[in-house]
Image 1 (tube, rainbow, N blue to C red):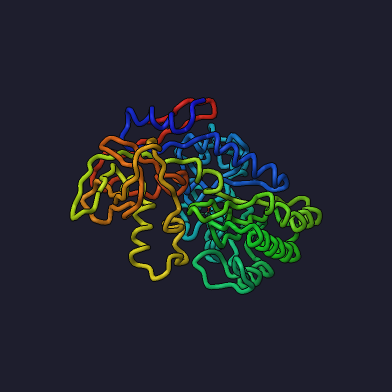
Image 2 (cartoon, rainbow, N blue to C red):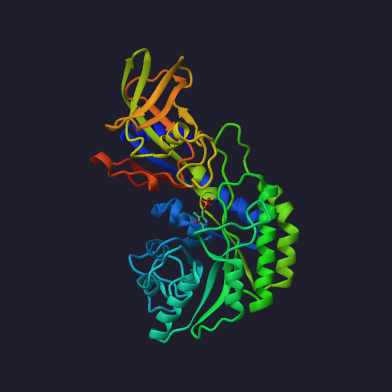
Length: 420
Ligand SMILES: *Cc1c(COP(=O)(O)O)cnc(C)c1O
């Protein structure tokens, strides 16, 4: 198969701005996860990129779905509405069976619960939600096993918990579980997710260990759980100074906790859900120089569809402008770091110049990079941005200014280009 730059170049002959997702990177990532963690069941977090070809690819590799909305449950089911007669575990259409889909999000309505019941494993985010699920089940004469999301008494890297809009505080959760009185709802699994984008294997392994201890505590109250979902955390390198998460190291550091838990609870699924680790680096955002101009000695390159097509760089510029610290917390997935992507070019040998990259929207906030050194670009030249596989197309306000939307192309393992 041709190299990725040749493929980008030929796609750019017919489109001025587009995403290109390289399936080979996705498959390589999934294989790496499976090889290092054969005892773990992986879920794909749909919210990071719900592109149909990506979903097909990821699910064909045996990953389940981490759905964050009714819409994502439907995408995972492979139809507009959850199909079938509401029997859990029933395969529907080309998608996943209900027992491979976990729906975890705050603020689910009674209507949401009614729509997905029997098509996925619900993970309740509050005690009130458990009661709502009980009400729906009582009314429909059904019984369900659910998970609960716990806000644990520990943090990702420390020993103390903190207030959170997510999940049920550990103490409250166990008080509820000890006195559980819902007739139609049985809590059989737990979910914890505290942080995304961790690159340090030691920190992640220590976190997994704490979640497994929490699962032991759950088991001592409720019996062997069906599943313990340890959430996400696996990061991808962005800045040139980042070193990639060492999966082999993570495997070595977490092996003993995983094996100990597995031996004690052979019937419990150990789950890790991940979005960006699987698809973040498979994606390229490709745009073109529409115009160039010099103003007060500053050279501007005006690109097609940046803030509205691939918002991440513009958000990074906003954070850079307004935040006193370059790593403010709680900004994922809108903002990862000031340089969580790199620029690639098809013109390696052109002389370098200092330029400011902006987009073609009528707002000054549409800025990609200021005063950076890149090869000399003329109108029509291609600019490529990396790490555009996750939280990229989905986050970008493509309706803004009624611009022509960027395309989304999927390069299959066999070299076929799908989509337009
Ligand atoms: C968004 C999200 C994920 C995926 O996070 P990544 O950093 O993309 O792996 C996993 N779990 C939960 C609960 C999430 O909200």
